[in-house]
Length: 357
Image (cartoon, rainbow, N blue to C red; front, top):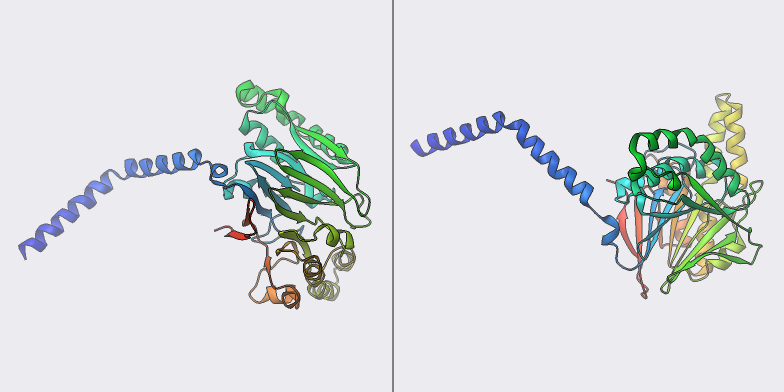
């Protein structure tokens, strides 16, 4: 009995001392957390090979786990971003990448949902990485107009940040974006847009009419390969250049579900929304069609992205796939944070993350 009483007194004293020192305890924990977060080097943890992460798995439609189109590809400690949809920069940082890690951005086309995060990504990379050169932005003809527009829009912001932080943080030479245009490839042609230290990035034509130009990208590094479709209808050209790739990252629009949405919009008298939902069905690829491409090209794994419509309720994934899983069973339906690793000189395909927590 005495022992129990003593134990209670000791516990009470510890609790009182903890309460009295709660601010210092919380401060200490916060400092350790901040130090761990700021001192982390996520990129340094990457083994050699191709790494791919969805920093945006969605479309213009709002979704809880699918931001605007954005794909991060890492090879040999170099980070390339394919398209820069809204929230992409924030998703990248939640994953662990820093804006200063970004080597370049590659645009597939100039629809707003693929470029609307570009200015923010450029500013974050500049002000957070001590760069003395602007962020390179690769793209087909017209990319210079996009880049010039963002540079004009952010010109005053550049002045503010330089005046506030000076050359140490925000050197004027590194501000903004730098367009690197390339000729749109013809059907059946690959155009090399980057070739350095074992990594080759090639552009291929896709069909997203009336949006022109529109391209996809193929990455090759140390006997591993992946292809990102961008927005396109089912394309024999994509299938041709996806032949034998380890990972095919392909857009997917479920026409059965979009038709349901169109019918509801019509019933509610929302003619403009109904028209958009009708129109978008003719310039995207269905999950079934993407699965057919993956099967016929003999790819290792199929990752769906640019998911339309958003998958937000239980059972909806089955409606989205609509039988595609039977055509090509080695697939993943993407969401923000989904990641894959293709080890160098290997045939392994490793999913390293199932999404953001």
